[in-house]
Length: 247
Image (cartoon, rainbow, N blue to C red):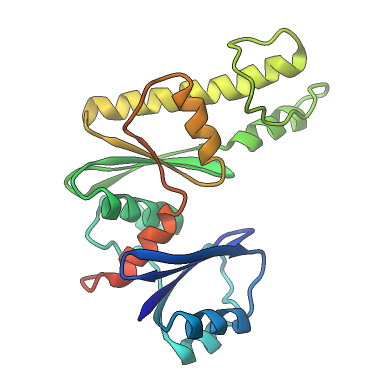
């Protein structure tokens, strides 16, 4: 028997199938229908599913899936052993909570700083003892480039440049790259340094769409074997939540 994990974001729906803790299959869709889900439930003998969504409306296939398998809807009460100290848990994004659950599942004996690099950048700390205290929310990489163009009269829209390594720019385009990418690097290293002063054995876990760029950005500037890249961290956390019987 297997678990079907569905993470519904603003633009993409990410899907994974797990047999206990083993990831068997993962993919993403811009839209989803019941037939696709039924194929997965039949192929992998799915008996349980968990759905996390940032959308207010139910999906058209929800009711049909509920008739096939046991479905749970991820919420702030499903902590899978994490002790949630966030003062307003109802406002906590489900992806942030799922990510720290995933971090604790993968690295149970260590604290973790989870850096989710997407439209925004979120920094979330789960301590070695399982306490989740919260974190920070910052503009994402592409949002920073777009904001400079949108809120000024003359600055051009510049794209991310993975090859850019200078600490300054000698024209407007390279100056923007320096400001955005070096500024982001200093932000990342500053957060990491602060958290590791509190918990010296802390893991740093990168996830999200820009995680590989962030990984390169950090490892070009510091030697950091404690930095891990876990692209399926949110899905891992949702799978841990559905397996936990104490929520």
